[in-house]
Amino acid sequence: MSDAEQPTDANDVREEETVADDEFEPVQVFPESEDMDLRPGSDDCYKCSTCDTNCPVAEVDDDFPGPKFQGPEQWRLKRKDDHDIDDSVMSCSNCMRCDSSCPSDVPLSQMHNTARGEYVEKQMDKLSREYVRNRILANYRTMAELGSKVPRLTNFVMGNSLVQAFNEKVLGITSEREFPEFAEQTFREWWDERGGPQVRSEEKRVAYFHGCYSNYNTPAVGKAMVRLFESFGYEVVVPKQRCSGTPMFANGMLDDAKRAAGINVENFSGLIEEGYDVIASCTSCSMSLRQEYPELFSYDGTASVAAHTYEALEYLRLHEDLEAELEDAEVDAGEFAYHAPCHARNQGLAGQAVEVLDGLSGANAEDVGDSCSGISGTYGWKEEKYDTSMKIGAEMFDHMEETEAETGMTECPTCAMQMEHGTGYEIRHPLEVLEEALVDEGSH
Ligand code: SF4
Ligand code: SF4
Image (tube, rainbow, N blue to C red; front, side):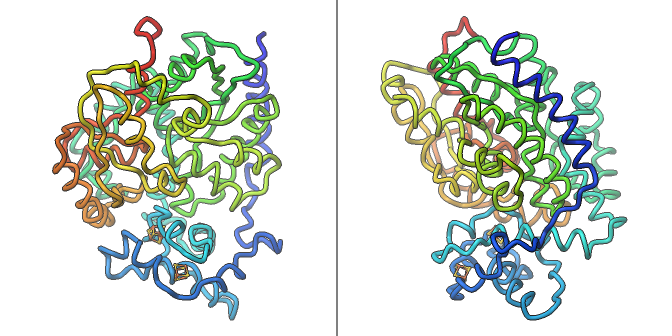
């Protein structure tokens, strides 16, 4: 057995153990530990309201009180008495734009995530339609795992207008959107079929966090990531993994997120000890491992995973002379209308795809501005949030249509859904264009 395969097999065992250990462990939403106490953070807020003016939901929904209320004000109230969490916290889309807008570094999204977790755990009716719907949406991976066993049948059933009407009426999942199609072969099935890593290296090693969407819906993104990194001499391994937790945080399902994070941290931190860095092709997944895990969980290895996680293109730019590589390359890709996901902005990655494609002959990406796409993962799938989601997205749709491009580009799979939904454009991932430019056709 090769070195690279050993951790993967060991991880299978670790996964089983962790699931059993964590099955019914409650989440400490408001832990006793001083380190995790956010209330002092609320004192750093000096009520400038910059976060409110940067909140896309508050901009279009007059009933939403905004991040200042959701964060520091609720925390101050909580300190004074046993204050219930206001249900408006469920209208926050978890775009996390307020985090990066605050001049005082108030940990807003951490406050929202913990408040939402407490609201769901203590105040939400577990038999309500909203809870059941949110639990289904938050656990997309479970549904995708089943659906991808019979992708053609699932795609046919989920695309049926009667099923869509049922989903809207009974569950509150909007019928306005096309359900994303499952791929005929998942990324992991492809990975196994090709025999795992094709390149071995002691020095250049990455562990790929593909997340749910690249595995079940858009394996072409995962394949492009693997081939691109292997073309640069990286050994890529693909450990067992669960959802990053992004949709769970957004729906206040912190028990589910904690279980998933436990498995991910255990499996990836083991690899970090063997010299691997963690890379993700979805900016929300990298955000989750980097920021939300250390903010909310304290598993051994959480800090190490956070410190060693990168978005894939970011990693290549840090470690390779991508500009020089692209100088001699050429593609016939044309113009792209590029949208930087909010979670890419939070990681300081907003301009990278445009900058990289600038140096590639035959491709050009035009940034469509800093507005939010409005879908925010599961948010825009909720029947009662659909209109808000489309109002937020309107600016991005307009800007996309104002460019020369008729194809969109983004790193986030749900932003891609929204871009396609609002414009009808095909949407590509930057890694797919880089693969076209830098990877020999023979290795596809
Ligand atoms: S931006 Fe920061 S300091 Fe200003 S109101 Fe919001 S939380 Fe308070
Ligand atoms: S996370 Fe986004 S939607 Fe939620 S309060 Fe902050 S800016 Fe508004």
